[in-house]
Length: 369
Image: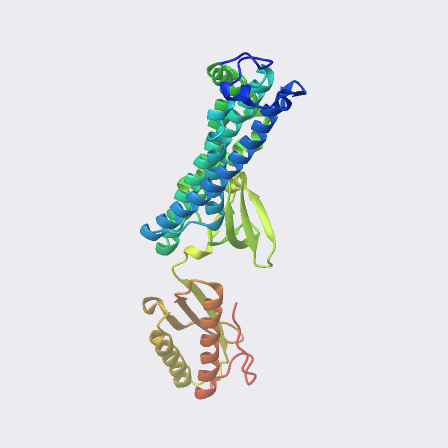
């Protein structure tokens, strides 16, 4: 080794370089600048190789394992693997460059920071791939517990990974006493909690959702005056797309106090219809109407045959009332309306068949609440 460098010993092979390579620019020799450029090119090549290697590994995984992984997660995995490969390949070559101490420390700080970022991104991508896999299986079996648990757990763990990565960066890059910081959070956490009361309530609301599971993504819900489909559940809020196709972000703290009606959880949808029948309707025609309507409902596949009611329920000063009640097995409002249309059409048909007069007499008007 010969002492040819400005800041320390340079490698032996440097002594064989032409004199022009030993010139300096901004305190760094020309050969060192060239080495930095080559190192950057090598890192770029390693990033490309790492990206392609991750893509092959993920394709092999998809070939032999069940469950789907989103394209976004696949891209994140490839980028993280490429960044990690590009950073790691730089470490063995920083020493032979014999850079000035200040520049060497700066380069090592950048490499360490990028290493922490790369590992955090790798862990992010691995965790997201696990969540994607579980979400795809939950969608196939309609597991409401997993459909609610996965989005909240995904965000909670991502936040935890970010906190851990931040502590590692503080300790490695800035030599901060992490234990002292964590200890100080005991007192500081109370202050922060008081200052961020609404955010804390929203997180508590998220935990409440996690344990109570009143609804899951894709469910149709009614919360106070808001009706729509649950699109996304975050740590702070729940996003609902209304039937008017607008998006409402409802703070999770509101869900602790609100009455949440999960329309999608209905096993059946009750139908109530009051038929106002004129007093001059013959009893045999009224009985025939009720009998045929019961038979029609009993023969429908999506009607609960155990809870069919078609009976004369009351008589007032103007007309008699036939109370019709049944329960449709309908998962969506569209199916419910289709079945209700079929029922109302059948009532009109039976009215004409038996010559029953609905109130007011002779008009044939049918009323339903």
